[in-house]
Amino acid sequence: QKEVEQDPGPLSVPEGAIVSLNCTYSNSAFQYFMWYRQYSRKGPELLMYTYSSGNKEDGRFTAQVDKSSKYISLFIRDSQPSDSATYLCAMKARGGYSTLTFGKGTMLLVSP
Amino acid sequence: KAGVTQTPRYLIKTRGQQVTLSCSPISGHRSVSWYQQTPGQGLQFLFEYFSETQRNKGNFPGRFSGRQFSNSRSEMNVSTLELGDSALYLCASSLQGFGGDEQYFGPGTRLTVT
Picture 1 (cartoon, chains in turn green, blue):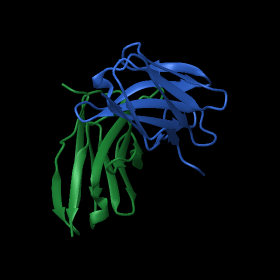
Picture 2 (cartoon, helix red, strand yellow; picture 1 turned 120 degrees about the vertical axis):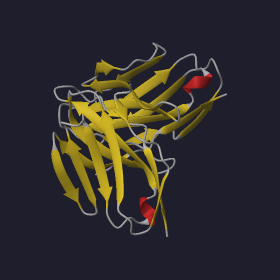
Picture 3 (cartoon, chains in turn cyan, brown; picture 1 turned 30 degrees about the horizontal axis):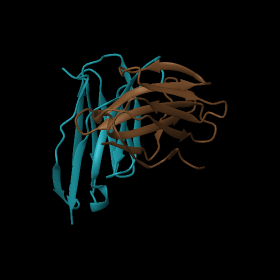
Picture 4 (cartoon, helix red, strand yellow; picture 1 turned 90 degrees about the vertical axis):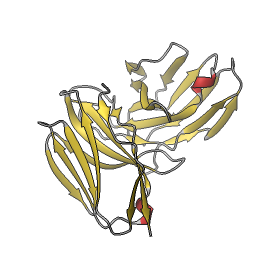
């Protein structure tokens, strides 16, 4: 079993839809949870960052962490064609250095 | 504030050659991490440097090495290139690399080995 599982997609939605992206993980030591967005042929861009369990909202994006279920989610409201990208979840253990463990990414396609 | 920069952006090398990639972190960031991204394996951690010292290393062969300079700039080197080394190599920087430090990625260097 991989440490972080993420459905590769592609996930195709119409413009304006609410998008839900998810990751599950097995390592209970993970305490820091991130979502990165990666456009084709670009580096990952940090979107959301949360510590431990709970929700965090930033504009159209909401990140949720449920540590009891080892499950994290990213919601995108009012999706736009410019949101079409690959979304990567990443996690880090508390007390560790900079090592991030990534999911393989979900490709999102938002059609006009 | 300028982001993480990586040079070169693209490289084509032949099997058996060696290659050096460069990364300049965000100003004030002292931790630099390197990752390899391939379609099959996704993003995999290579190593992390802080204050010119390697603090952490992923599960890659010794052909992969790196270093960090006193200005926090970092280089990674791959010797005796293999076809399987073709990948996007990403550098990320953070303030100190501890706990909750956020990591910011550069645009990557796309290496093609023929």
